[in-house]
Structures are given as structure tokens and as C-alpha cells.
Length: 286
Ligand code: ZEM
Image (tube, rainbow, N blue to C red; front, side):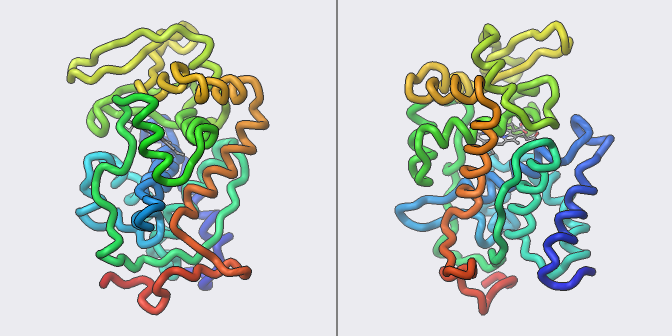
């Protein structure tokens, strides 16, 4: 137990739980970043539905979306922290865990503000199908990310999160990691995208992805069709080239856009207090 509002205590415990020798590449970090992203990436600006506030993924309607397959691992990693710091909401814990994981894996400092509640307004539940499908192309990326209010540049910056982690055949159907050191935040994803030749491969399960055999790593690296779509579209490609050349610029832009992502659907007053949520009901499901 920590005193309510002691977010530094929670940050410390998140950092300490990242080391997971038995799990994937030895870190819980990548799947925690994905949890934060999927908790927020359901936002629709036009109807003001979805987003990280409410932590709807605890419930089957959202948690059982095939797009969220595998994220139970992230939620299970965090459960002991939720018990220890029982005053923090899931919605804050999930977004904070993503922010802390990025920093701990060598990425930029992500500015994060608390105040999300676990109150789910049933009329604001996002329908399934709002998260991107890796099998598609540039039009699909724009359709998904413009809905949240992101620009082409921001779409490319956000995609740089694929420096982290891997695809699991039993979760998404895709298989493998994008880079050789998938628990180290960097701009390698963009550099490899540009410098390697990517060959189409159909996996045994029928899923189509792109691969490059890297002799240094003795592991086949991968790209999703949506990743390589960034190279086929001139407006996206410009930013891929910028971020491949300039790591600092990538870190700076990524930090900004990740904060924007985890703030989608949240409005705050000048003190940073969230104004558009039913705080009276915070922590309870309707
Ligand atoms: Zn991902 N992502 N993502 N992504 N993602 C996967 C894994 C990870 C797309 C996608 O289809 C997939 C963003 C954007 C997009 C992470 C972070 C972010 C996987 C593999 C797929 C299929 C899942 C599996 O099998 O476990 C698509 C199409 C995207 C559109 C651009 C954004 C934005 C992210 C954060 C800012 C991360 C960290 C992973 C690795 C997860 C892990 O478990 O290792």
C-alpha cells in the first residue's frame, strides 16, 4: 500500500516488474506499451467515444476483441500493482505503465497526467473494429488514425513503437520481431525498413507478412503489410526517412504523439483536472 496519489511509488514498481526472464525477450515492457496503445486507440473524435478513460478492456465486449488477443498478459503483469496501490484506477495504471516502460527501455520521457476513472459509460463503449489491421495498406491507416485526429507525420511516429516487441502467431497470426533488440527503444525500425530488402512470405497459417533474414542476428526479422505501406506512400515515406536519419527528432515527436494518444477523449482544466468524466462514479461500473 502507498499513499493515494503517490504515482512515483507506482512508477518504481512498474519499472521493477519489467524484468521478466521467462517471458518473450525477457521484458514485460513491449506488451505493456501495446496495452496502453490499445486502451486509447479506440477513440473516435466525431462521436467522442472510446479512449483510455474507463479501462473498458476489463470487460468482454472490448477485452474479447480479437484485436486485443494477448493483452491479458499485460493486465496479469499489472494486477499485483493494482492490489498494492489500490487507489490508482486501471485506466491510469495501464497508460502510466506504457509511459514508464518506454522510458525504461531507453525511450523518451513521456509526459503523463493522472485522473482517468474506471467508470464505463455504456453509451460510450467503442464498437469492435476500431484498431488497425496489419494486413492492410495506407488508406486503412489513414481511415483509422484520422478518426482519432492524427496527421500523417503522427501516424509514422506512432508506428515507430514497432521497435519494441514482437508478433505472436497465437495472438495476431503474424510472427516475429521487427528489430534485433526488441526491448530497446530506438529508431532501428525505420532504418531497417529503408535499408533492407523485404520479401513477402506466407506463413503456415496463411497470414502474409514481409521478412528479411539478418545474418548478424540469425533471426528472420519481419514487417507487417501496414509497416511497409509507410514506404509506398510519399507523404508517409518522407517521415520514415526523417526518423531513420534523426533519432532525436523521432524521440521528440514520439513522446509528443504518445502523450496525445493516451489523452484522447480527455479534457482538462488549467489545473490538469479531468473535466469531462463522471468522477462521482469513478472506480465503479454502472
Ligand atoms: Zn502495434 N502491433 N500496430 N503498435 N504493437 C503489434 C505489436 C505491437 C499494428 C499491429 O497490427 C500490430 C501501433 C500501431 C500498430 C505495439 C505498439 C504499437 C502486433 C503483434 C500487431 C499485429 C501482436 C501480437 O501478435 O502479439 C498496426 C497495424 C498498427 C498501425 C500502425 C502503435 C501506434 C503502437 C504504440 C504506440 C507494440 C509495443 C507491439 C509489441 C507487443 C508485444 O507483445 O511484444
